Length: 422
Image (cartoon, rainbow, N blue to C red; front, side, top):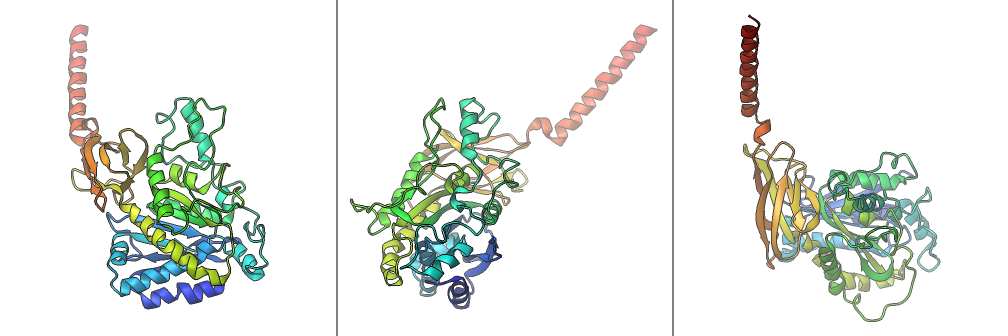
């Protein structure tokens, strides 16, 4: 186990020295006590978003005393660096084709408390909350209630969108952890496609919606529009894990797994493009260091297999007829009532299971375009790009003609009125 100082010096700084061409350390913000929330980027072109390359994230340490995920991500950094240098073809494909972000400690203040007590003397509460007393996992805006309330009133998508639901204006002025604000800002500025947060608890994978739909709703369906995709993602990790699918699981707390508003997974799905799941790694929140090698072996293949799912579905770039990329264009899939948006660079990724889909790209001031896109079983996302034409009613040529016609009509009406007067 590594405390804050050791994590930075022994683990985070080691990778840039060994793999300077594929790694970059940055921080997504600071904790309440001013500790940096470090991230490691692993990419063939670190520091830049490459057109057409998806962005992926693993996070851990939402609860400071759930430490296994933290150590797994530190080991994953080391593994990817070493295997890339050793020309492992699978790792080469991952690093060259995905911009990977690893954040091992989202709650560094609380981890220091748990670390000081140690694995033998720790308990459920010590280090669970932030310095300010927040449970980060449950500290995000409750967009579920907004979305479901709008659905019950028939306002989706006419008034309230089915994606990128805005954060309520009063949220950031309310009871929000310093760390939560940093995570939200990070989510908003990075076009993540897929992610997972590693926690402690019953050995299980959980996906949106984490919050249960209120019984008063006219519809009791709490599933997302991407239920089948989320099930695939969850099963990918669970079945790649060496012990997660065993028939017997021990019993431990489940309060962090079921119910409740403001969950990180739901917020990510409803406010950004990113499909995120929670991976609960087992009841022992602070395993003894002698158990870490075995836990790494149990999770290694699952960690790699899950990253590879970022290529499942379609991807493309939306441009206008001049070849200029269009940011914030909406990508809709017929039959799936959840849209995504293009990044500032005009590219998008839409996770989908194999099948045939009618996909439509829309942007303000342009005529929509629909294409038939096929998703196969082979590795890699299907290319599905769009070229949008300006709506004729808003083109400069049409506006010029309209003004000319208007002028001619007004002139003729004036002449007619003058002749009638005479």
